[in-house]
Picture 1 (cartoon, rainbow, N blue to C red):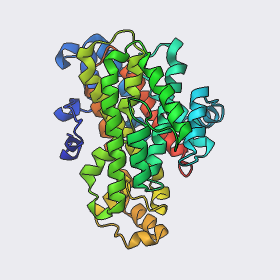
Picture 2 (picture 1 turned 135 degrees about the horizontal axis):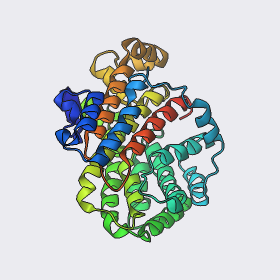
Picture 3 (picture 1 turned 45 degrees about the vertical axis):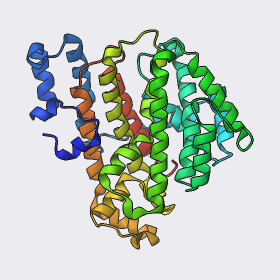
Length: 371
């Protein structure tokens, strides 16, 4: 059964695991008698895929063979050519903080992995371009909070440049302002923008709030706590915003399914956050960024003190000795299973999305030390 820890995410939905059923057993029962599980034949087909994909086959979460596609992933990242708008965003974001080219090629592959199957092949490249542009610009906002820990810069970008009504100030960061306005204009022109721009606006503000939280807790690490960070930091990975953009490309969406779609993406957002925490906590700790779930858990379990962080290598050794990463890989796996237990949406292929989330985890481990 899932423990209480799963329920403080705010996105938890009762799943087959809540009934104490192993995913394999549930899939078998569904195949034998779909009505016994309340699943349609289509949902059973998806569950069969989810069983094949589930992380129990995987040593990291639950046994994932990280070497499975390492060379293919390396080649894919190496071969990425960023689209024009994304290239402009990368150049503009250097006004705040310049990242290695690898980061953006990696991000292209990660965003591609979790692009909803509702996006037609005809529009897929454009969707990835718009989402990568958004990711680059929001990473600039995140860098103002995490890497530079500059509250004035963060608030300026949030309130005067990266707004849904368009950039209000073009003088200080002209490149960012120009490309942001292009992005907003492009999104408003999409076929289902009228339905999903309000959600995109809400989700965009939520991402900004997560950055503000990072600023506050990095300024006062004693305020960090496991449950609050689990929600707030995960929101900085903006998977809801990316899904909103994908849905804007759909000619029609059954809005009655939006609840389950957002529940699936909510679990996925936690999974991406967890993968990032595991892949980047050592680098962040050396930079005195304590907003990783791994580090916060170390404080809360008294594995680490603020004094310990004055010697980063010692702090890293203490965390490794406590094997805190295992806690988070278990959480990753629980979110995976929770997605598999939700109703199957008609708008996109859930099994394909789960497959993409596994790939994001592998990509995150591949990027360890470079992201």
